Length: 325
Image 1 (cartoon, rainbow, N blue to C red):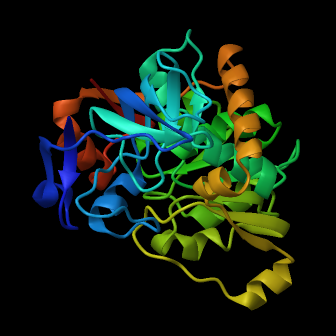
Image 2 (cartoon, rainbow, N blue to C red):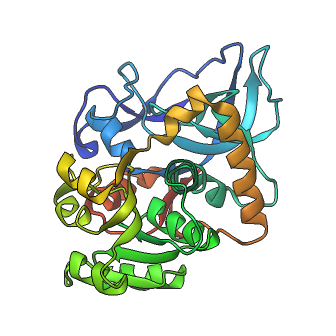
Image 3 (cartoon, rainbow, N blue to C red):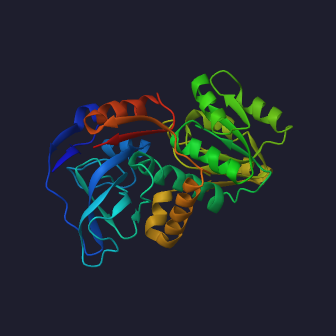
């Protein structure tokens, strides 16, 4: 088969190449999927650079989620040849003609949903649902501040936050991204390139701060973010798209009576697959009734993966980038 493969760690421009590679073979609980669509995610950059928490043996293939048709199964697989599935590959693997999934890392796909939409759903909405519901326990009437709100997980968090009855403040770094957040239902917005995040959040909350802060950005802006939390609030740490891992002073947590809570959605697939399956089914139901709808910035051909990675790297997009066969 053909695959986007890297044999050493580095920037995708230098190490990622379209090459021949042996076809994967299924384990007893595995299945092989012929790829039709792959959603690009920030972890794909980290996988290629060797900075992600899960590393596949080199030479390796990036791509953590994908959609396709099952072509081969192991003897204990829950799938059958011909099934349409959505799969998650924690250490990468979907940017290829074929990828392998296990019983716990893939789900039967609704037939009425286009492949690019399916590819754009699992990681972003799974992450945001677990973050807001299972980790933050977001309640109706609470104020939710979303950092990086125009990204994939950010827009998913806006839609889910509104569905859960929260007042949503979306923070993003350009007017184009602010406009996207408004179209997805944000009640208020902050452009943190031109406005003071702390002052605006305090103004919008009558000085109380946000009950829940959803942060996939980290980096330098966290210095402002942690000053936006309300008493008895919860800060959900989703990732570090800002490039650096921030710190928080314990005295601030004590005085605000707040919690800083980590979320690594992919670990639930291994540790609590039944919960993931339940949420995935719920998300498909929400998609069917129109309560959520992934925002796709651009759909590219498989040959243009480098262009997609450039957009990820430069943060020159909103929503999701999908590549299709």
